[in-house]
Image (cartoon, rainbow, N blue to C red; front, side, top):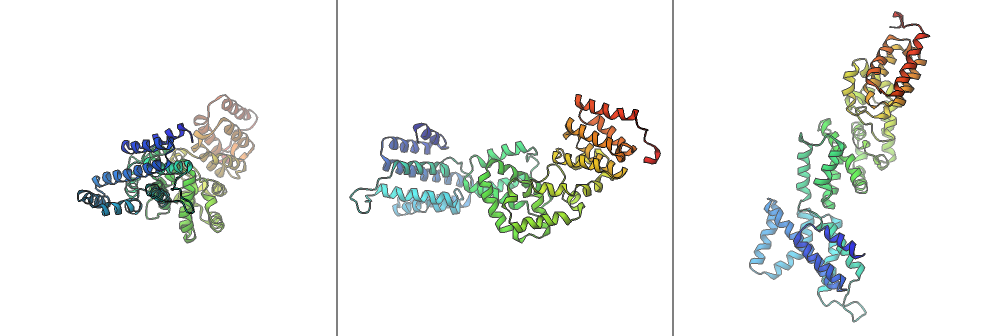
Length: 440
């Protein structure tokens, strides 16, 4: 590791006080005084944790207040044994009582604490008259671990952060736009959150997607959050989502499986975390569950579809889903039903259904969905649609179908290719008869 890399690590330290100790450690390291460097790293960690403890006590954390008062009493009365005991138990307090660090970070810092003892006391290497002297590599490893585990993070316990997240997600100010949600998660929880906080947040979010005591908006906001967390920290998300699913999936009934489909199956990579038996049950369920459960109750065609391969399972039921809402809704009503940003994965199968429509009413129902998705249509989509519609008499020979296409003419793509496609569509009227009343 060069000087530049050491400077980068130093700049991650949030507290000015802790940075002074790290500066001492780096100076000692650069001079080859590795024992002194390692001692300074531990001092930085201990001082930083105590500073965080005092901050949390001032914020009203009961556990932090109890530990602060005990420390202050030992300092006031100069009880050396009590102060040494406090230092010995500091990592346990930070992990178990305050949740400032996770078990992995605690174990890393315990190794630092043990090596600090070997450096601070005349500890000889077995079968040698030499004192313990850490290597440059071990000092750099301890420095990175100290910064990553403690020194780069703010004084927020996992418990308090999760309580705040629970308030966030239930509030009217919770971001509705996914990019803004990602920014919020980074700034408030992920960028400066401890590994323990990030792990607990991912686990809580994943679990809440199954919470059938909550309404669909609550569950969907957790699903959106899970999707953004996967983008922000894919490795961490996979690890902690796997741990949740390992305990959860074998206990799921059919309602739980639907909650999984409507929740974590929207997150790329989750399908691969499921057991083969769970996948088989989902496939069977989505073949046989009544279509209205998919369309109306769980709104699985609203907005984005789940990630592959669950999206294909829903698209295979599209011909059943369409009539359930199309015959009851004008496209203006269908548009909000399908969401502000309908999924383009719906468009190719819809065009196929236009080509295969076997009745005037069936063709009209499909075209209502097409109209509802018109903001997502490209000019290529429109050209393909008009080509297949012209070749299907259940569309081109029907007032119902042509009426829906006239709506599409006004709300769909308006470029040069679209104009040419409509001109070609109109040309057929010079060759074919107008639709008759028998078409209705």
